[in-house]
Amino acid sequence: MAIALTAQSVLVRDDEVLSASLDNELVLLSIENNRYFGSGEVGRRIWDLCEQPSSVATVVDKLLTEFDVDRQQCEADVLEFGKQMIDAKLLAVQTP
Picture 1 (cartoon, helix red, strand yellow):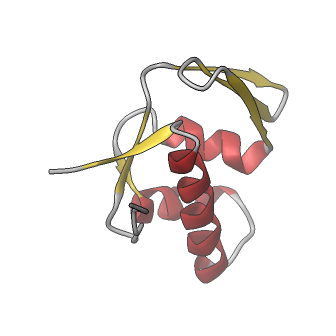
Picture 2 (tube, rainbow, N blue to C red):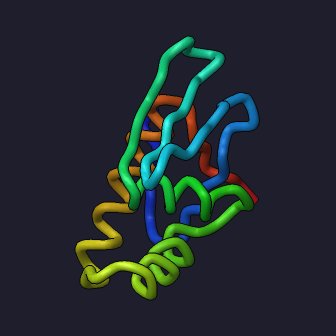
């Protein structure tokens, strides 16, 4: 069943994922899937912000102070990135 992400969804990293920053990029290794994933600067920053459980809205608010992007586009991008990372079992949605 697909998870519907919203601005209130709380994202958190999967503890079993190994990550490394290379310049402004991010490399992730999923032990469970035995696969590598890569992301650019914004994906790296989202990953950093999800070290502790963070709502999508909190991530968006922080990114808006760091990157030149409008709120609507930023939220859409964070939601899409979050969905991709959840599908790959790199991030999870924390339930209350």
